[in-house]
Image 1 (cartoon, rainbow, N blue to C red):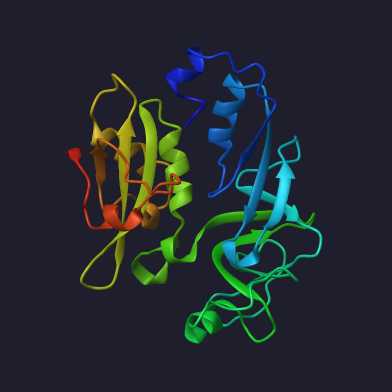
Image 2 (tube, rainbow, N blue to C red):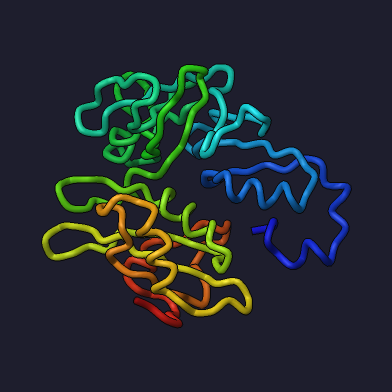
Length: 254
């Protein structure tokens, strides 16, 4: 991340006044690290290719809260529904975020099945993003539905919560948490960590750091892997499938 990169000491960034954040949620920890190094306003944007433009946006101010992606843009509608039955949810209740607007795509070319699974009969786009809105109309994106970790007794764990905790440890440069499938269909949360230069390699310490701060069902029972780097695609998004499959250079683990 730019806030912790040594390159910030090599270049004069005083002319940088405005940056955008998109593609994933911005945690409070990452935002504070950035603001400590760069005196620039941060504009959070969220949208989908299927919407043709951004659906929410907000300039980070004192009103901003952790994982907030702003308010709904003009000409957009947004609602949150229960992932199990599609029922409309109220403020503060997490579920799948659905969006509707005149810019929504007509269809996926020559793929009606994919289109119907993405856009319903009323024109609502099922984003696959998990989150909620508050009483002031601010929207919070907590995770992708497919990334939620299903532990014992059907309890769900949000990877972003554990990742944010790991990033608060002074030895951690990057952190990603995924669910590792088991034969009984349970998933175990496993943390993948890139350490800061010169930091001691102590996966057990990092595992305990998280486990001491969360309920039992959120423990990193899948262990902690110290890795050389986190696999990413061309635009910097983490390739979680590779992590789940263990396709990574492991330096140490517990």
